[in-house]
Length: 407
Image (cartoon, rainbow, N blue to C red):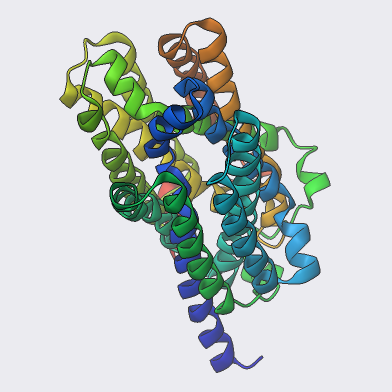
């Protein structure tokens, strides 16, 4: 492939990735459907919300397999398959008549489709732009966050004008068209030469998993996901229960979270090309700690509630944007999809653990306490962790790191 064709392919791939990520981000509007589904199935909201936990787990499992699917079928074909599966899952959700069917369709099917498309397309796009990993991650993953904001209004309007069943069907059709259109624009990224990469060591998944740094990064990622996904999944219910807000007022948390999530992805993603990425993660952890501490220790009013959940969402969005490039800094770019895929299992595990703790030990506050402790531990890890082999070579200054990442 000549240079001109290569250049055109990577920009088309970026455009297709942004379109696809926008549609996949629509799953973050799930809390809009907790109430209507609880009424339809005559089940408590906590049981309905468990579907989002299953969705997150299936998303994470699918992401860990994405690299193998891409190697066998190519990014375009796998994305088209994800589009079909996503539409089928949402359309079947429209006919769910009990919790098991809801969990299977909205949780497992939709989550698996979303996960296959999310990590694979984003990683492939980053590989096309090795010189601007942070910026491209911000664009791709930012589009995912923007999708939650855009579909908040799309799905709200659909719910206002159509039945719950028709809303799910239309959502599935819109998602199908967008993901398929994006997939048709994509091409697989060429393999990077080691000399062109900042990190000359390309670790395989097996090699990475033998290093302590791999599991320390996994703990930090799991913690960030537990805090972000738990708060996102029940934000409206937190507002109603802890702040005694009306249902319509608490629903504004969905918009606040979407804006904060998108802002974190864009701001921290771009910042990660200017300074050490692990320090960007440390900043995100401090912001999340402030938000969780507010939820735990401050008497909440609506303004403080919105600020606190915004802090958590900002941190979560920024962390999952920076992490793919952070993993490639530690373990190389060529195997990033596989290396990040296993760490990404923390996305689903974190969501499930938060929901289980809330169910077993009395709701929001106990979960907030656990998340706060884990965030403090993660901050200590991020401040002390070093890249593999870094202890044996002279340490670079923050200026040199920024120059290396931003050149």
